[in-house]
Image 1 (tube, rainbow, N blue to C red):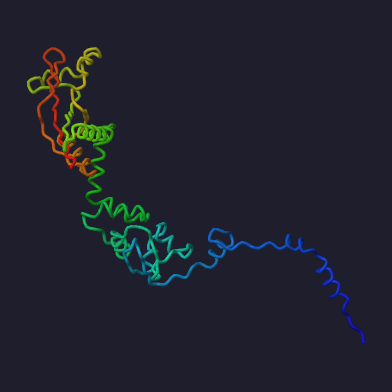
Image 2 (cartoon, rainbow, N blue to C red):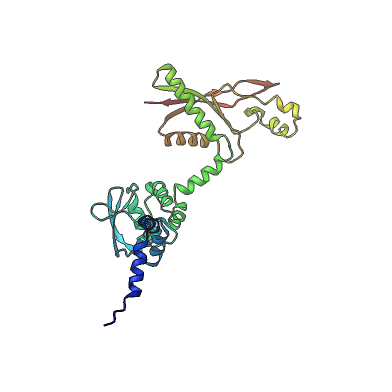
Length: 291
């Protein structure tokens, strides 16, 4: 009887001849695939996650339920990317897809994605911030056309005429805080000058002033340059908006920061400049209450 076994015996012998150290060098334990590895990315592209048609959501602890098609309504949004099936989405203990964001206004986001419904006037600004976070361009465009956002653009165009407006607001806050701390007081008072015209003017000097304002030499103009004895000064500017409009902006912007402000006109700057010209810029007393 003939037994043919040489080929297999040679292979087995060659394998046994390999040293244990060589085997360890040859056999390298493969790394566990992670979402960031190339193999996961390729598999992810070829086999996207199969999401259910009805999506349960947990947005910062608030629960919502919507259709997958609603979340995919507009391309190039954060929600459309999240629920495209290309990305891993964490879930809570109940299996709801979790978004780590305050969900107070997420219902307004869903209502727009569902049927184009816009939020009421009092929530426009806050929903706008959420639309920015989720990168929902159509919603941002729609909100831009509503009050108060549309009015804010007009107001900002006026404030852009004063390049140091924000710096002056900061100065008001810092001076008010320092005075209140130094005096151990509940409130602080500041003197604020708000003037629209650059040159001094009084009612009975209007005709003369208007005829001379473009004819003064540079040396004569310097006689009218001065700083009123106040803490902060706003102006001048060229626009239809007047002093009261700017005062409204100052008080509104400070109120947005939670600062309570009262103001009243306490007179004008009586500094003598030249000949019969005096400053006459209005001076306002600002009272900031801290608690």
